[in-house]
Structures are given as structure tokens and as C-alpha cells.
Image (cartoon, rainbow, N blue to C red; front, side):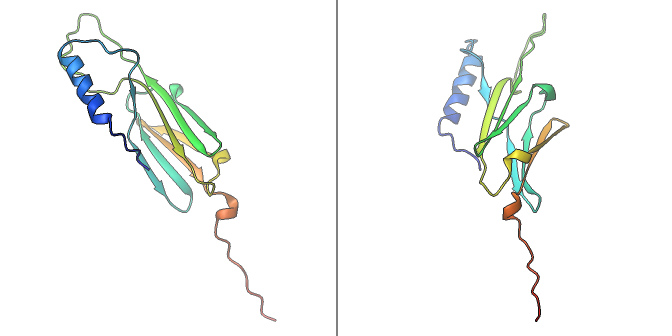
Amino acid sequence: MIRFDPFKELEELQERLARAFGTPQQGPRVYAPPVDVLEDEKGLHLLVYLPGVDPEKVEVVAEEGVLSLKAERPFEKQEGAAYHRLEGPYGTFARSFNVPSTFDLSRVEARFRHGVLHLLVPRAEETKPKRIQVKVE
């Protein structure tokens, strides 16, 4: 479920050049945090890595088969500090995931612990395997 972005390397090169020559970036920077997606008997699990993001600033929306995430990690410049390297992700992020109808987006559970947002999208009731009792007559 990783989206291929052919321009990502070009954007990273552009950002490096801008930092090297002291050119300020235009507008807020948008980044995509790494996400692990796995499936088990409970449902679909998404682990979104958000170090330094305030959990109160994370927004999760589920509608029409799409699970969307938004948050911001602002850069707080310290007065009198000389920055030699900034590699941390700062700015806003937004990611969206298409979720198959075999999962129930109306019952999404979200937990935030140690900088990782864990989302559980449970299986839809009708898609769970049901054991059929065979009657002997």
C-alpha cells in the first residue's frame, strides 16, 4: 500500500539545494510519514510514525472507503541558535488510504503511544468467516 511518487527524489534534491544556498522554501512543507500496514484476524492495522507530533493535533477521518490522516509538526526556531543541519520532518502532513469494503470504517480505533499512531480498522461483520453447524438427521 505504498504510493509511488516519481518526483520525490527531485523534491528532496530541490530541498537540499535550497538549504545549501539559504533559499527559503515557498509555503508550508508537506511530508508523508512512514506507515506500516498489516492485517490479521482483528482487521487492518496502520502504524503511522509521528515523532514529535502532539497527539492533540492529529486528525483522523473515515468516510466513503477512505481513511485520511492530517497533522502538523511546526518548526520552532530558537533565538540565538545556529542550525547546522535539520533533518527532522517539519510542517504538515496528510495521507489517505483506500480501505476495502471488507473492513468497517465506522468502528476505527486510534491510539497514540511513543510517537506512533496505531489505527485499527476492524473487519466488517459480514466478511468474518462463520462456522456452519452441520445437523445430522
